Length: 268
Image (cartoon, rainbow, N blue to C red; front, side, top):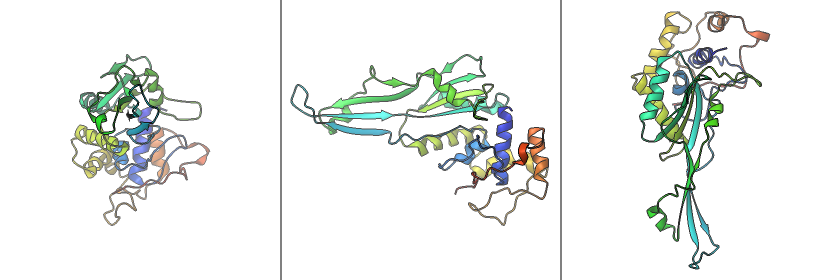
């Protein structure tokens, strides 16, 4: 199995709404815009929200001036993903992330590729003041900041079974050093992909990425079906086994095509 196989299979699952999946592969997350990322070949193993980006606390243990201290901690979100090595749009996307003022990137092309980084991946930083209002005027403590290690790229390797990860991929770790929550982070990534595909909205991506499936008559557009209850491009009468074998080069093992745990739909 190659990353390109995972991308093709996932695109078909999203476009057809058939839930074509394998249990170790993730296809759906709770964030708006995630289906746009999937269609572009951006399929992380996980998107984990560790809570608020900013946390302010009051420490009542008095300092030498007999005053309480206030601390503010900023935590940056990270998303790791394995992209296709053969799709030129993968490089375009990574280059755009490297140029983005909010994003910090660590990447490697394949198992033996050299590490490329925009800057160290900042995880958390803290500042301290004697009042809550004074926190905004205090600089962040650079010396005691915590950074993500290079080993974070292990999380970028696509998981295909309980014992197998794909190393032959464009390994990318992206950290958002801006503001906002995880949804804002996903929105930034979606906007970058739209720019890479020269698209203004989701329907432009569907036209570009779904076109080959329509041309081969594996899918067709049904204008009578409305979002979000049905996919934009439902399956046609063509045997789904034919599409599976075209994507994977073989028939499915154990007679399993559909993962009952997956419920693919298009959000508004």
